[in-house]
Length: 551
Image 1 (cartoon, helix red, strand yellow):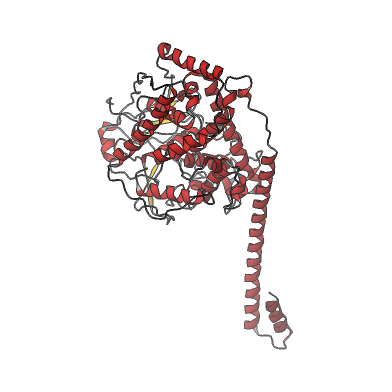
Image 2 (image 1 turned 90 degrees about the horizontal axis):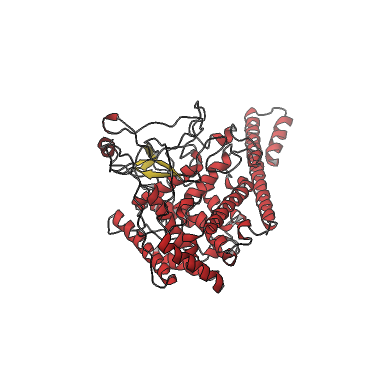
């Protein structure tokens, strides 16, 4: 810069100043000034990020240590640490919103496969029930089946987990969304983001539409927020949110992970579909105009719980596809960077020799065998056989729609490992066993007595589920090329289905600003499937259409 100014001064002081030299010197000055402004802006962003991390770490150190209300004067006090830890782990990795109807049930006689679990509300409920038995130690299995207090405790901890995560993510907003031109004021809870252009353009592909509609797969979930064809779930904001979820605020500053973080204590090294879908919910909520993180946004009408289940379904049902497997490898590499014994395998995962359905069925059967073995050990070898509830029958989409959608390839390209492998189950229960406090003989006798009493008196515990309305349309994404370990922005086309039997899923229209699109017709264009089910806690669960009824 000094040399350039010297040239300008020399040219001006000359008796016959050279116009060419003067113009070149001025142009150089202009370029250097632009570079200086850019560097100043970068330093400002880095400063804001460091302040956010510092503030987040300070607030975490002063967190209240008061015991949760549910453990006061409760029979579950001896299991306090197990319930807190396992509830948080279940919410982070599998069931982000909790699922009230999955409690007060025995272990299911048959755990639904990945394809089956989204066919009906009952099937999904059985699947979540199996997760409860898998994630909680065996000495709490009687409580899963019989104690309302246990259900309340787990749901309470799940709610606290979401509240804490949202608070920490908002404080770390400048870091999570670094690189995006978002006003710093947007990370204050009191900020009105509903009409803020810098936020709105990341939540919908058409911010000028009247009425406004928020997309299920908005720009913020894509690698390139300006291109709809950019790979889905590769955005760095998702990766940072997942690291914050598992390893705390220090993970936002780099690869160094706190040994006291939950992810380090759990020994996790693998991504799940629940972790990706939960991170997507947080990332979209922080940009929205909603002030409270609830299943249904009060101001925007965004159905966060429905979006979570829809994205999770997409990941689960495309778990056998190479592009989906590539996404999970990418997440494993970046989310768990810095974790001990974390070795990234860049080589592609070989395709299973069985058909995808059989491979998935074998994985689910292995998980069921493991959990049933643990359950039988706890109950002296006796496994109570309960009648399996009848699946909810749903309207079938006509053969025309089925044939039209039979050649779909899915949107995500990700090898979701939606649930831990059989090898991971041993690690899961081993990690739970070292924190389990043996209950007193009196408490264990009481729990056993409750379980024995329920074997002779209890009937099917299926909870009544209110039927909701969803249109027969679901936006999914198919790619012509697999997404590699490092994404290369393949061309992606949006389609309306992903399976030979297309799922009937569309976002409910509960006080949203825009009407839901109505695509997908049955035979002869008559009738549309309606298959949204809501649990008693207001959480929408997407289900797939069955073929047992005619339109």
